[in-house]
Structures are given as structure tokens and as C-alpha cells.
Amino acid sequence: MTIVGITACPTGIAHTYMAAERLEKAGKKMGLRVKIETQGAMGIENELTAEDIREAAAVIFAVGIPVRRKERFEGKTIYEIGVQEAIKNAEAILLKIQNELGR
Amino acid sequence: MKVSRFKQYLLSGVSYAIPFVASGGILIAVSIAFAPMTASGPDFSRAPFLKLINDIGSAAFAFLIPVLSGYIAFGIADRPGLVAGFVGGYIASQVGAGFLGGIVSGLLAGFLVFWIKKIKPPSYLRPIMPILVIPVLSSLVVGFVMFKIIGAPIRDIMTAIQHWLEMMNTGNQVVLGIVLGSMIAFDMGGPVNKVAFFFGAAMIQKGNFAVMGACAAAICVPPLGLGLATLLDRKLWTDQEKEAGLAALAMGAIGITEGAIPFAAADPLRVIPVIMLGSSVGSVIAMLGQVGDHAPHGGPIVLPVVDNRLVYVIAILAGTFTVALLMNAIKKRMARKEQAKEAP
Image (tube, rainbow over all chains, first blue to last red; front, side, top):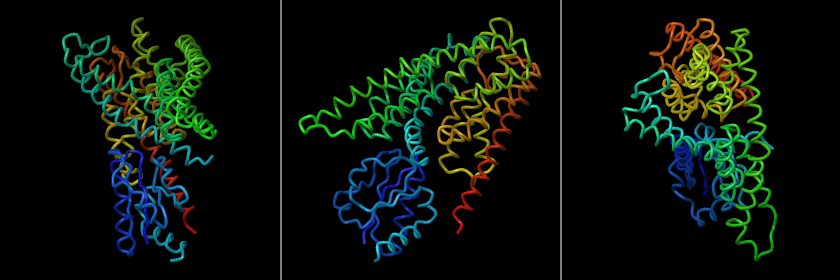
């Protein structure tokens, strides 16, 4: 299963990247493909492609500011959480999504 | 509307404004720190290079309110919101509506464009909506509101406050101290702050150094107090707030109240009352201790031109610790509440 996501904190220099790393690491541990786009102070990095988004079973927004280019995710199941939440409970969040999707 | 959404919009503006505050604040600070301080402010007449640095910093700082406003609108309405947001923010700073005016113009521009975007135009008009119709229409409306509806009342309010301040000078010093301190902290370098500051500067010309002394202590309390708060209890603050805290300490030390803006914009209803109280503590102590400031500038950096230096230092420390301890106590209570909510 593929899960994509976006992380963005207001300053965009530390937490954005920490949250992305935690989510990707947790995904690897659980055998999921997790790709996270960071919208930090350096702009958009590790950008999600149209294919990434098409294949994704769910989308996570771990953000403290509005998501940029949100229209790419129209029609997708979106889970919106805080950046801190993703840093603290990345695995629990992925587990919850996994359960809710029934796989 | 959900409060968390609203906070996201404000933080969107703050996140783009932070680098401008850092660039402008640090350049201005460096130039003031190295220029000789005189009775009429820092003297750049024999330091053209410092003057240049000061001018560049001021240029960066001039973008603070337009960028704040523009990216609040961007957060709400995405790209089409930028123009009206920037235009509104620029007008806010032009008419002296400051940081609070910028927030109002950003929200106004954002919601207006968000609403215009909902209208479904005929297909032949669609391509020109984002590049022509929305920018022109939204700037026109936001600009009109800022110039004609919101701008004038703020100016009037400011004039009224100024008269009231001048009349009160003969009255109770404690009341005056509280009023000055609250005004200095209220909008952190905005119009209300500037009214108190210019009143203090005007009093220097008339030979009264006490009003400026009270202002000088109040000016540095918000950034110093919030910076200290992030140092006293590291786990209450996020990494980005800790970084903003260090910048705030540096800006507080050289008397730039704007250093507190990142904190206040993220959580205005809690931060602004706390820093108003802290600055009031500082200016009341300075008033009662007859601190006089001969330079129209504040913070620890003016210590060489201050009368009753010991009381001045005590006033700053008292205000700073008031802010730091109170802020952390509130933060702790919030954290406990959130934990209680999360627990089953």
C-alpha cells in the first residue's frame, strides 16, 4: 500500500523535515510505501508526482500552515493532523489509516 | 469556522514574514549597536557604512507588513489572494495601521478572493479571472476599505490617544506607566506603540526624560521576556519557537519590540495581554524610580544615556521575568489541559 503526505510547519526549517522523516521511517518499518513532500522554508522538496498521488491509498497532511497546491489531491482520502502529532506518533497514525482502509 | 484554520491562515503570513524580520532586524540592530548614541538617537553622520546597513535593513523591514498581509491572503485564497493581500498590507503600513492593520487587510483580501473564486464565470472569461479580474477587483475593494474605511478611524484613535496622554502627564505616574507600557507592548512596533514612543520622544525635546525612560524599559520587555521564556523551560516550546526566542533576545537587547511578533501572531490572545502586563511592570518601576532616557530609543542598548541606571536595569529585569514566568505558567496549564483532553 502506498501512502503519500505533505509536511509543513510555520518556520519550515526543522519540524517539517522531522515529521517527514518519522513518517517515512515508520512506513518502512511497517512495510508500507510512504512518500512525503516537504513544504518548508526552501520551498517544495521531494515533490509528489501525479503518479504518486494516483497510486496512493491515502493522503496525510501534517501541517501547521495551509497546504500549497492542494488541488492535486481532489477526490483522495485526506487525513489532516498537526506537525507535532506526526513527529510523536507516526506509527500510530499509519496504523490507524491502515485499519480504517481495511487492509 | 474552526479556530485551527484561522490560526493556520495567520501562521501562513508569519512563516513568510519571519525571514524579513530577521534580515531587517539584524541589519538595523548591527548598525545601531556600532553607531555612537546621542541625545537625538544613533548618530550616523560620521559612519556612512553603518548608515548604508541601516538603510538596507529598513528596506527589508518595510516589507514586513505587506508580506504578512499578502501571505495571510495567500493562505486563505492561494495565489489569486496575493495581490490584494500585498496591496492592503502596503496601505496598512502607509496609513499607520501597522501590524494589526496588516492582519486585517490580509484576512479581508483572503476571504474576499476566496469568495470571488466561488463564482463560476462563463468559459471564455475563465482564463482572465486569476490574472486580470480577481487582482484588479480585489485590490480595488481592499484598497478602498483600507484607505477610506479602516485607515481614518485608526488615525483618529491615535490622535485621541495622544491628546489623552498629554493631559494625563500631570496625573498619576503609576497610571501613566501602565498606559505607556501597555501601548508599547500592544502592537509591538505598530501605530499604538509608535504613539507612546513619539510622545516620549516629544517629551525629551521639552526637557522631560521620564516618559521616554518608561517607554525605553517597556520597549525591550516583550522580546526579552518571550526569549527568556523559551530558555527557562525548553520543553514547553517547539524547536522553531526556541530559534525565534534567540532572535527575540538579540532584538530585545537593542530595543526592537518587533522581535516579539512571531510569538504574538501565533497566539495573540494569550501573548499580547502577557507582554502588556510585563511592559507595564517595567515602565511603572522606571516611572517611580525616576529613570530618564535622553535618547529616543529603548532597550539595554541606551543604558549609557539613561539617568538612574540601576533602577532602569531593575525595571527591565522585573518586566522581563514577569513575561517569561507568566507565559510559561500559561503554557504549562495549556499543555496539561491538552493532555487531559487526549487521555480517554
